[in-house]
Image (cartoon, rainbow, N blue to C red; front, side, top):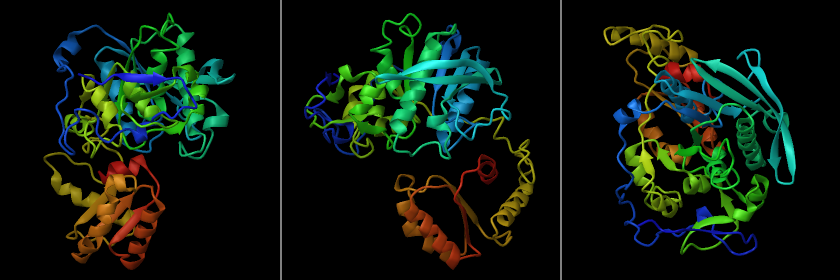
Length: 417
């Protein structure tokens, strides 16, 4: 049986934070031993035969507009696949500085939408474009999103609360009402919370179901109690499992997990693993309370975009019957990264964030033995300065073997893959 979820509206009391939840809840499995999920089995065939749904995706990044990692690919491709099945699918994301109005053909569809923020309201505009039958909404709030980076600012909590609230208010006063709101990662974790509280009796949003997908469990959106006031749910208080120790911080991902009608993550195995202390990033006690609503769904691949037979970015296109053309692509990458073009030298490529979560602590221990065997290594990504420095030192010492690019380019990453 699931543990009860308790809320407290006392902002001054010692209440638990998700990052300080007990390492083992009553009945928890032994460390590292995944326990079985109790969520009902998914029936994909029945779902395909079911009614056509109105589905709203809310996320911080979507290809091809903005991308810092894998979630953008999923959110760029899945809505199109659902649309092709007959569903009415729309996407909402912030209009960052990098999203050019003219390039993407954005049209203003709503101006001066009031998004409540604590004791005030922020006025935002909403733009729209269409891609492959899917409408994409962009929330424009220059003070919050007209910046060089997508995230990692001190006011990120306020920024994505504003984005989420603006989308909800835009939908609430419009003529399109979603049956399902699909939220992604901590940036939109407050939305399921709102649907069960301040929008519970709303004529437009009160009937909407919520799905919350965890792409990166390690980045949870942890802020002080003030963020509940900004979000307008301070009276709902904190969320924690019984037996937890107590603190006064708010975990937005934790709120998404607690309040969503369904919770999903990126594979069946990972869904089981995050119920354990080893992989649960201190949210495993909370996740165990939702194991009857937790699913692991393996990410698919966009076979139209990732098709080497038609990819215009490749030096030489190929298919299953022309693998002999692939060396031309390897040589083009070696030239682009400034490495010697050596057909028989193994070329290893890494595209990821540079941090411990992606295994760079292990790579730190294995790179020198690999280089001693004569391989070439190219690395694309950004992350911890420690690993930036490590890679730069290796490139200086092994200029014929190590090359890097500390930026993200979707076009380049596709050529590497």
